[in-house]
Length: 102
Image 1 (cartoon, rainbow, N blue to C red):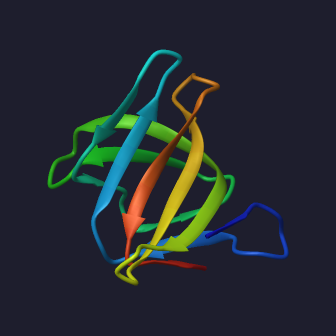
Image 2: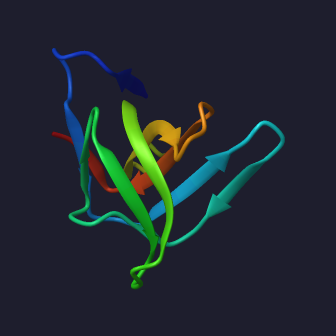
């Protein structure tokens, strides 16, 4: 697994698999399954609306500031797309399967 957040590395991520969202607060960590980001790609320093899959219902807004890539034990590539949610300063992340750097 590796993380990247500087200009000489990946500037974004794209995925073809499932997307879930881990919302972290001071007191809890809560996974929201089956979410979507329009276009199935994100870029560092971008601001994205996270919706429930197959709806227009925006559940969070994420300001992307770090990308982390790795492979599961079964070989499937994944990424964690980290950033601040809405007005919070606590990092949360999107977890995408079949993900690759851009």
